[in-house]
Image (cartoon, rainbow, N blue to C red; front, side):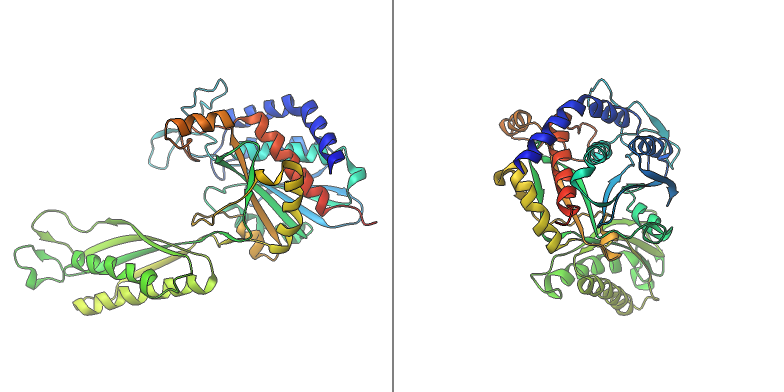
Length: 418
């Protein structure tokens, strides 16, 4: 491992300036979800240059590149490609000046505020390293440039267009994601559940409108909504096993009336539902329907309209894969720089590949210089979060850590049999 570290560090230093230029290009030229045409073309060009077989147009602008090196396992390394409708305020010389028109017709900026520019550059670096060190591994490296992660739709779109049928089904899949709370020489990971199932529920409560001074002649949908919101909070606190993570949040109540003295005919609620296990996921959704119908029945109202939109599944890091890869990170960085992270209730569509039967691991890559982190601590502030208009990585050390860890994981999983 010491020899690997020295060789990798030397290669990274020789190639770092070029990788930084690639990063700056990606950063300055972001594209929104399912619009990643030029981004995909750039990735394709970089992967073709190392001799990979490249296929484009999978699930939108998705890219699949295969670097074959004899018999052996298939390792998939995934990067997302899309940016966000955020106007950049970092002040960087290469800051994005891209503008686009939103669905509402407004002009908005576009920015890689979630680090996908880092992810792409890192995977270009890893691919280049493995391409010039084929004597150290055997098998097939499968690189995936995925669209529309921000919409949690790109992975499913690629799978539906035959990702694991048209191309070899991986034996393992690894991805990383930037983490602004970590120093740029650190990574973090977790075994098992890392991120949540994400589901959305839209409820239309039906009432009987009338004059606010004569409520006895109406069936008040706002009163039903108030009762329902309180009832929903008892699902997690009183029905779900206490050690099972679960969240039900009513994020919107709208179209519930028009003026002070009018009781309307309906009230609409939008709810986000988060969980880890499939059983709890179904329990939450069933309980929401049950309580919604019960409130309506109690008010003498007609049956509510309930629409459930199942989103991305929970992300589960495979235990065996973690056990093989994390010791590599610890030898490369030092155990003190490999952090065990807490589980979160956010979501990531990398989880779809795990649900498709592939052992997966997503780990977090620190992106902020230690001095900058200390400055934020002295100000009693957190560094800019992901999706912030002021988020940016300290790119050189970030790439040193990202390329070395992902390349190290690849060499471990694709090491030749003796």
